[in-house]
Length: 317
Image (cartoon, rainbow, N blue to C red; front, side, top):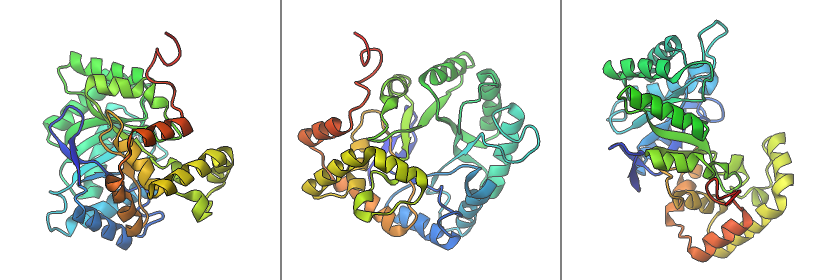
């Protein structure tokens, strides 16, 4: 396994992140526990979850049960969870008010059966709560030893700037990571989000690296799990067919190539993989054996043209 510092922090994390979205939904608890054990066997130490996964806390509970089995599981894991989504129908049971941040953290700690979170992430920007309030709440949690680092997800570049400048004014470390939707088919973050992350020393953690399965060899599997995937496949069928043919020429699977491409991108700490089975996890790890030379990278840019580089040069002089 390869490791990297998370952003400008000293925290060492694996360059593949185990995503747990499927735990409790598509992956039963026994299989999820086997997946987490297998991740550790491969050296994956960075696990990502969220309080809304698995029907309002179910996924965190599965991870907590696994930690409770002992064997150094918690100590060997860099644990990241997220808050923002509604956890109930009553006011203040979602978003990023100081009240919800406090309550959500306590609830996650209880479900995860741990006394601290390595990385506490805002799952979305909350336009109704000022960053001064958010950072004050995070500072309290950090002073209490309940969180070590703070991160974001689905932030625009200007949200990252506002967050970091507010943190600087408070002499707080601010964000060390940002989770963004980033893959060969979706490269919008290269305009401003990724450059902002690089400038501020924020680690980029791409989610949906296989574009919901479209980049995972979907044509050869001929399996459409949802109507949404089916519609997107028809939209991108020609380019995906060309991509899969290119991967055949490289002697690598499409998922391996898509992950290897992300691992080659400047500023990317590591993509989140969300395996449903151990075989999916083992396949993802083959990305480290996939070497993309200059010609392969050029061909991928040709098949999946990005926005043209960072702004403003991407659309002006």
